[in-house]
Length: 561
Ligand code: ARG
Image (cartoon, rainbow, N blue to C red; front, side, top):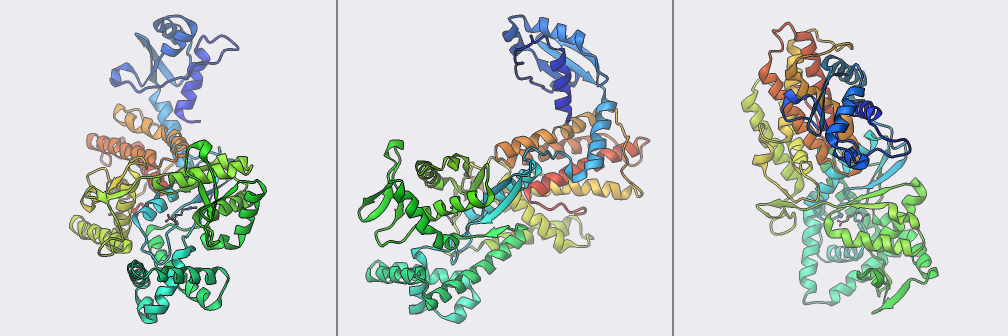
């Protein structure tokens, strides 16, 4: 159990709560003034429950607590202030970190249950967008958090590889496309063809019919059309893979929309049997008037299915294959209505597990306050954006540490880590302002700052020469106390971050840990001190937890930079 849990038990046992009554939630605070103890417990809620004064209750509790962890108790107004046995507490925490290493802070709450996580989902033949980048990074961090909390994440890339647009693309390619050009720059070239088709179709509407015809051919399995589609898909996946490699993200399943093509009839069957389908201008829809939201289109007037239909099939498939107790979709906020409709339609069809499908939305990536688009005007390719960050990181590293050996490798870790951390720093529904300058500031609240602090810890351990961590170390000094208490909170933060699908709780926590440690390091000498051994253990503990935080966020932790 972590420190907070242990203390909670000690305090609750001493509280005059009548049997049969539930105790009010216990709040443990850190007093602003260190003279007021290590932990402060406000007694208002219990006072209300027992109809006594909080001061009285605090007084009574203070006489009852007897535990080796608590060395002194003072009552200040309505607060119960505890002074802890630092040796005991620090010893417990250091031992845990040293024995569990990366597993420190993990729990088994999830009992190994599967959690499908829908993340990334870029659309083939189009540039990988900033939104897909966010989905990839946020989704990956949430998947890591689920595993840390004892679940088994299943990372699924729901590729956008089906739909009428591919009929248009095929038509455009057959008209104007050149094989070699597509081979050279698949995404740029396919995008160009698609845009050209769109432009022309504004005046030549018959082109749209042609596009629909090709999509129909595709749906019916026509070999030539199918071959082209497969080729475009393959080329796109190869380009996307380079981005995934850079980001260090991989998937358990690449099951795009096309995967569900042969599972669509069932959807229409189910909805028909439940008498949910209604005709509307030739299309089949499920009305959701009672929820005051627009109807969900299931089949278009030309008989083609759409995004929502495929997501219906996807939900069924995932329920059958993973028997989930929750299933996550990490997709931008602009699709909130889509997921709301999807859940309601599933519920109407009698699938009560639809309530376990959770849309985890996120905001936009902005540049200079405007939506950062990879489409308008000149095509900004995401790979180029990531490589630019790596290049900038390399310049900074060259300046700061010219003799560093594996500069390229470290620059890659730092440049990519900077992009990821910038994304995961604030709560996901906030928009993110993309700025190289900010995210690569080694002294700011950035990924590189965390990586740098981590590397600094390792540099100390290296300089110590023969450091090997061992259990049984205790640290008594007041300067180390903020670091120790911070380390003790990790397990709690891991739970909260998962419960709220909020990686930024880990970001916040690691920034605070790094800052607290750097304060400590500014105050005490580590290598040339008679406390060297125990202080090095603290350094080791901080490095271990920081590395684990970075791993959860999907960021690498170089040991020198
Ligand atoms: N391809 C979609 C898009 O770009 C995202 C897919 C999200 N996942 C899902 N199951 N709908 O908008």
